[in-house]
Amino acid sequence: MGITKEKLAEDKLNPFVIFPNRVVLECDETNHIHYRNIRIEVGDENFNRIADAFEEAKKKKAEWKLSTQPGQHIEIGRAMLNPEDHNKSTILEISRDLNQYKLDIYGGNYDNAEFTEDEDYIHIHWREMRIEMSKDDFKQFAYNVAKAREKL
Image (cartoon, rainbow, N blue to C red; front, side, top):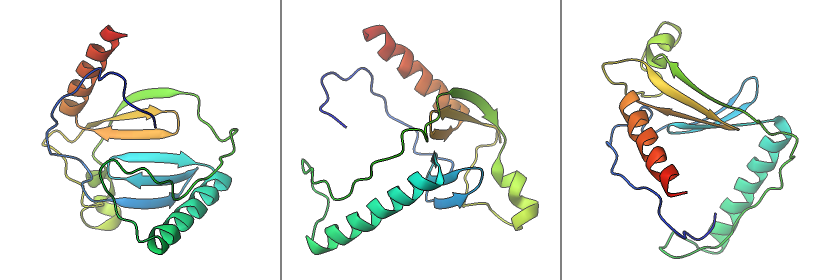
């Protein structure tokens, strides 16, 4: 990703997250890769390229007997993506608690979701990425973005 030149903002976060332990792969209007509170959307071709990169990385990590270490940077997988499979928009919206929405369909807790008493949350669409956060986390995030913007 690069070498940090200057830290523009930093803050401690509430340990609460909506989806604390979820990894889900979905095939919907696009392919969705969910990792905790982040969703990445990709088309079929790029999904397959990413899956191949994960397979390659898993194989190399085992063969090379690698484990994570501070300061280490060893590339173990790579995919060249189709540049046409690219979203060029951003949206910020309030969404409702999926746990309540899916309760009738699945008959239980959806993805072990943990919501606050206020069941609405913020859903940020940024290009191919979706980030879900509580309203309080969003306020803190927006504050830090504004703080960082002043330094630019």
